[in-house]
Length: 371
Ligand code: DHB
Image (cartoon, rainbow, N blue to C red; front, top):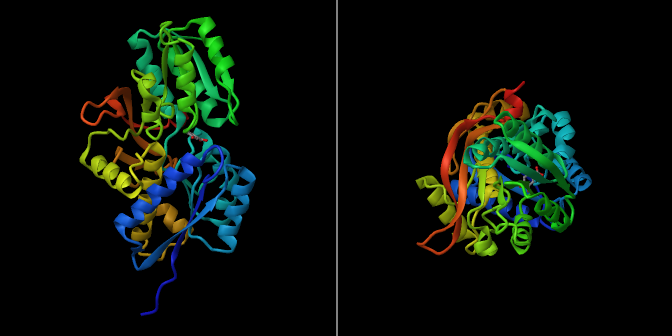
């Protein structure tokens, strides 16, 4: 029998530059999925073609174009930052190629192309869940502090809306540059205002610097609480933060400490394949992104073109290491549990984890629910 041509997945990842930790996590998880599930699906050999977009949208767009025209990829995937996912969106639409967004989190991304499917999270899923918890737990007056681009603005706005509806007051909104941020003047401002808490969104990789400066300024001792979406207490960096991180409350879709059998196996295999590196919420986006791609290849018996693959991805429902997930057939966005977590030290291994203590089940992107 003639060999079918390979099924090519073009993975665009920031492998160098400020966001290299995101690329490293995504790459490791995608490779682990292939290693565990085999590289032949429905008779097609799955090939990952990895490109370093360096976190720059123009490079992402050019590489997506090359992957489509030269390599003739069946699926585009990856997308470590919102501007990178948006840069490729028109190409996905023109070429009718599924774009699986494994990391970026601005709510509107899925509206940039009917070919986009998301397996990460939307910032309003995390931020609105946090805004429900805070006023019931002694937090009435908040300053928001976010990275000044899509996901930060989504986090800020969705937090404010939900928090105000529940009687909370947001007294100041601060936006920090995305590239090479210096948090100190912003934290000083928070300190001067003395709110009950500061609600933070910073992208994966930036949390450790913020937490360190927060504690150095004595803001914890001054009675200001630090809350945020789970990007702040990223599993990749958490141990490096040390005791400074203890007690931080965040809301998000994935913790390496999620107590399920599927997650225990995932974390163990990931660490084993990557010199002990712990998977973070980026890793689970890529692992599940590969799952969605594999399921679409199977459902189309290895013969699906872009539209057929996309149709097979819509409505997929399964048990991920993060918990139950569904790809909303209407919005192509992910429906998933959002957990409330507190950073604690596990006496068993002495390491820091985001320990889940509550859950909002099957959360849809609040921005899409409102429509
Ligand atoms: C995005 C990037 C991140 O590193 C993150 O933690 C969340 C969202 C983004 O650019 O969409």
